[in-house]
Each structure stands twice: as structure tokens, then as C-alpha cells.
Image 1: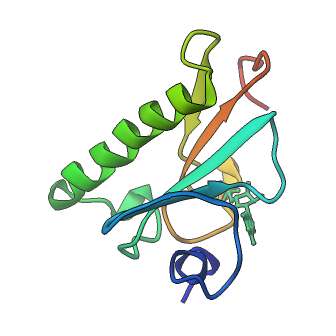
Image 2 (image 1 turned 60 degrees about the vertical axis):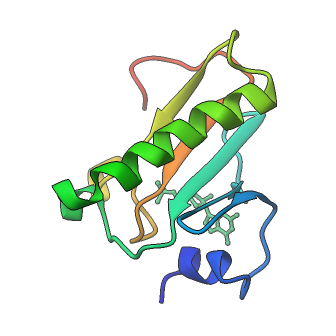
Length: 112
Ligand code: 5GP
């Protein structure tokens, strides 16, 4: 079981900001911006490489939740970034798909 599944099951503590039957969202332990939330599905999917059309609604709900949380954080006007890291070149360190929501400061482009 991955670290993120353990967080979703409350076996490892995290600052959870949302949970429902399908999704869990929590503050990143090592925030890269004033607001850095991780959104995961409860379903174990290792990476975006493993997402199939049958997961389209689930992944869509992750994006919808990101928008809702961005509004709650008050960054819907100032802006924010959503990121799926996939594989080693992108720095994916947990093999359970997760959407980063980063906001609260100007974010450089291109990313590092
Ligand atoms: P990745 O690098 O795989 O795209 O993102 C994994 C993220 O999970 C990193 O930003 C990292 O800081 C965060 N993370 C790793 N371990 C923990 C943990 O135990 N708790 C929380 N809340 N975040 C974690």
C-alpha cells in the first residue's frame, strides 16, 4: 500500500481538507507555495500512464475538486497551478496518482 493510500485510510496523519467516497485532499508536507494541496483518488492508480477511459470521470472529479478548493483558498482570481507529475523526469515520488494544487505566489514558467 502506498503512503497516499495510508493517508486516505487515516493510517498516517495529514491535514485533510476534503474527503468523500472517491477523493481525498490534504496539505502537502513540504509545501512549494503558500498553498499546496494534494488531491488523490481512493482508487489505487500508479501513474497517469495507467489511467484509462474508465477513469475519466474520476480524474475529471479531481480537477473539479481542485477548482472548488482554489475558490475556498481564495486564489481563483490571483491564479494557481495544477500539476500531475508522471515518472522520474517529472519527479513523481509517490506511485499513486495525485494532482498538485499550488497557489498563493507567482509561479515561474517554464517549470524547473
Ligand atoms: P510528487 O513528487 O510525487 O509529484 O509529489 C509527492 C508529494 O507528496 C510531494 O510534494 C511531497 O512533499 C508530498 N508528500 C510526501 N510524503 C508526504 C506525507 O507523508 N504527507 C504529506 N502530506 N505529503 C507528503
